[in-house]
Length: 155
View 1 (cartoon, rainbow, N blue to C red):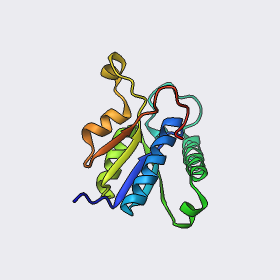
View 2: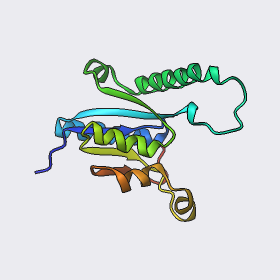
View 3: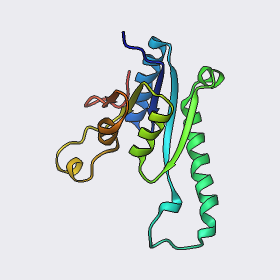
């Protein structure tokens, strides 16, 4: 029997991530699993060359990016989810895919549910997508959710 105790749903706050969150909520309810919502913010200290201004401003900029991400995640949650203390995670990294995979590994995630734009072909082959990299390297199954053609939102 498949046991899913902890589900991770990454979000970049777009419509496809919102649809993935809807799927993750349903699956968490079905399996009576814990649900964690994560967003990865860029590590401003990992920026390379061409940065203008004072490096001393980086800690404040990093804090602002993380606080904004937390606010956006909080806006996605229902009152019930907030009261249930659903886990919200803001990860700081230069590689979103690696940060998500590392979090999944250390937090004993049983399933990752994430949105994908479903872009294939040459662009994905050259630069790859976060979802594709997570699928290839995650320590658990990954369910990718794509917005059906012609639909703006799940319904």
